Each structure stands twice: as C-alpha cells, then as structure tokens.
Image (cartoon, rainbow, N blue to C red; front, top):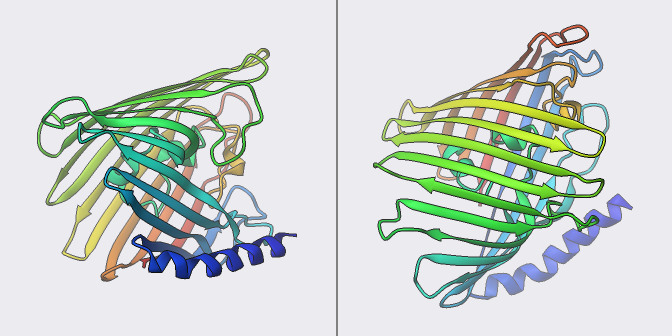
Amino acid sequence: MRKLSVFFWIVLVTAILPTFLQSQGTFKGYMLGEYYYVPKHHDDDIQGRHGFWFRRIYFTYDNELAENMKMRLRFELNSPGEYLESRLLTPYVKDAWLNYNLGGIGHELIAGIQPSPTFSNIMDIWGYRALEKPPCDLQRFASTRDLGVALQGNLNSGKTITYHVMYGNGSANKSEVNRGKIIYTQFGFRPVKGLYLELYADYETGDEDQRNYMLQGFASYTEDWGRIGIQYACLHLKSDDDKETLDLFSVFSVLKVSKKVECIVRYDKMFDANPQADNIPYIRFSPDAPSNLMIGALSWQAAKNVWIIPNIKYVFYSIPDEGVKPSDDLYLNMTLWFKF
C-alpha cells in the first residue's frame, strides 16, 4: 500500500508539473540529505548505526492569482527518521493556503494548511532548519503547520510591531477528529535595527476536558557578523486525570567566518523529562530524564544554492527525579542541503 501511495504522488506531480510551469506561477523546492553515524547512544540497539538518508524533500508551487491574492501548494516527502526500521519516504501535503492582502493596509488574511505562528519568525531567524528543527518543534511542543484561518500584519506605520493570530484545528496537517480547537497569538517587536523580540501564547481545548497552553519568549540580534538568539518556552498539559508541565531553554549563535562559511553553535535544555522523547525522529532522546542538546556545525556554501554542513550533536542528561540517569548520545553527521 505504501508503494502504491508513493507511486500515486509521483504520477500526480508528473502530471500537474507541466501545467504549473506554463502558468504564471513559480515552482521551487529543496532536498536535504545526510550521512549519519551514531558512535554512542543510551540505546544499545541504535549505537553504532550509520548510513545515508534523505530527511526531507520539498516541491513548492506559488502563484499570484490576483493583485492582492496569492496561493501556495507544497508537497513534502518526509523520512520517518527511524534507526531500527527501514521505510520509504512518506509524501503528504505540507502547505495549501490562500493569502489575501487587505487592500495595502498592512494586513493579510490566510486560509488553509499554513505555518503556525509558533515558529513563523523563529524558523527564519534560526535559518538552519536543514541542520535541526527549532527547539519547540524538535521537542514536539507544537506543530509547524495547522489547518485554519489566520490574520497577520503590522500594528504601526513603521512596521516595528507585528502580529500573527490564528484559529485552527490543532491537528497539524491531519484531519480533525475532536471537539477542541486552538487559538495562537504572536507579537513581534523591532525597537532598533537588528533587534527582534517576540511574545507568544496559545490555548487549546480537546476531548477529556483537555486544557493545554503554551507560553514562549524569544529575542535575537542580527548584524553583518551573524546572529544570536535566545528562547524560553513553557508547555502546560492538563486533562481530567493528569497534569504536566514542560519547560525549555535554548540559545544559538551563527557567526560568519567568511563569505561562504558560517560557524553554528546551539544549546537546548529541557528542565523536565519529555514523555515523547523516544519518538522524536533522527535524535532519539531518552524519556526518562531531562535532556541537554549541544549542536556544533560548519556551513559551507559550495555553490549558489548548495550547502555542505558537517555537524556534531551531543546529548547529555540531567539527574532524573526517579531511576538511573541515561548515558550520553553522540551523532556525527554530514548534511547536504540544496535548493532548486
């Protein structure tokens, strides 16, 4: 069945691609491949694994439908990031939205499957999704996409205060199967050149009296030498029988060594053990203790749209409230990222 699904998507893209290319729209995408080696891991079954994989492939179609209206259709082929089971790349719709510019007053109305306000600016400032997801996406605090309606724009004429609000299913790219919904709010501030501050909150309801909310603060500074960023997030999960809080801190730095080389350093700290940790693709954290992730990388722009990124990811664990502290994890990767 999975082979038939992949075949269907290949046929579909092949059939509609000529039409897209002949229209006024644009077709683009990127591929993200990697050679990985795991010399050390708390899970003996993963330790020593190595090989090649494509982590993801994007095919994106953008079109200006009218003077104030545009659309995007994006397909993604995604590797499940499994170390112990071999699977095909899974194709699905990543984006499918319509954007209406409200008459040049600095506000846009977006409907469909779209980027959530949780990561819309942080992802761009971090700039190295090819290397790793932003912290809250990596730890599964929230999804990068949701199906709903959003409004975004500027709150002042100088465009130094921005907003992004959204009402969505809370089910990411999947169909909705519960009575609950989620409200996202994000406000950005640019008081001086290069400095960006962001405040974020969401509130989600669901079945079994679920009442979840997330708070997030982010600050960054960008200059000719590079950029730095710092982030704190808190996720509260509550249902009839359970209550849980997860806190996260992250800091990163991207420094320009030369015109084509950048040095990247990042540190993520979980203050609580994440029960979803062993389901995170590519980095299999232990769910038994709070994790600390350190990333070091060099990014070399080998051509206009080609980056080669050797990187190291090291995970060590804090002492848990109960049980034994897991041993450390080490990942050595050679990442290839190219756009077309």
